[in-house]
Length: 215
Ligand SMILES: NC(=O)c1ccc[n+]([C@@H]2O[C@H](COP(=O)([O-])OP(=O)(O)OC[C@H]3O[C@@H](n4cnc5c(N)ncnc54)[C@H](OP(=O)(O)O)[C@@H]3O)[C@@H](O)[C@H]2O)c1
Image 1 (spheres, helix red, strand yellow):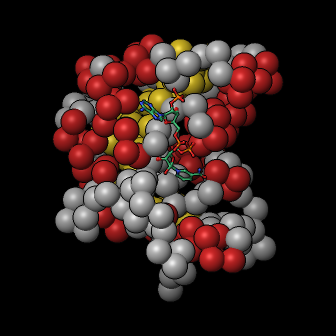
Image 2 (tube, rainbow, N blue to C red):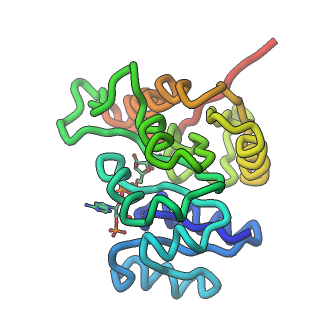
């Protein structure tokens, strides 16, 4: 598949490597294709490509959102709303506010009544947005190995076929997937990022992932 990743930060680059490792074609979207870290990424991944946000959204049969949460809606507009139509859109973003964390707890610019994912789905109503990858550090997004077993990725979204496709991707990336339902579930999944970051911000411990234990 052609995977277009809007966002060239560490998450975009790590997921880019992961999709390339699984045999997909990847374009990373950025405002500046000549940034040092992207030239390095391109050199290390000659089969990957770089493009603008709109070139990347057009390229992707699947599109990943990996931009800073506060500008993600702007980035989608720059990418072109129509370029997302009928596509599976994996939303890895978090609505982290610029204010500093309080006792290790990040501040969000959203409320418990409306997630960033729901705003994104409203902005691109023709797309099939699926929340994933937001509640684990980039070091564990691909083939995570923990002594406690396979970690759980919580996902949600309004389109069942899109969630099935994302579940296949997550399985190939080494994750167990738990489907939490429709887009509103992102009101609960996005704050898992806050929880995931607390040990890191308080004690510099960043080497963990969530696992759902079931009977
Ligand atoms: N870091 C992690 O381990 C982690 C884990 C899970 C989820 N996340 C979430 O994943 C997303 C990406 O995180 P990240 O750490 O890779 O990078 P980031 O610094 O949050 O975002 C980098 C991306 O945002 C774009 N950007 C920044 N300001 C912009 C603006 N004014 N207009 C348009 N685009 C702009 C950058 O564009 P350019 O390419 O043009 O510079 C770049 O592509 C975030 O929402 C984050 O919360 C992060």
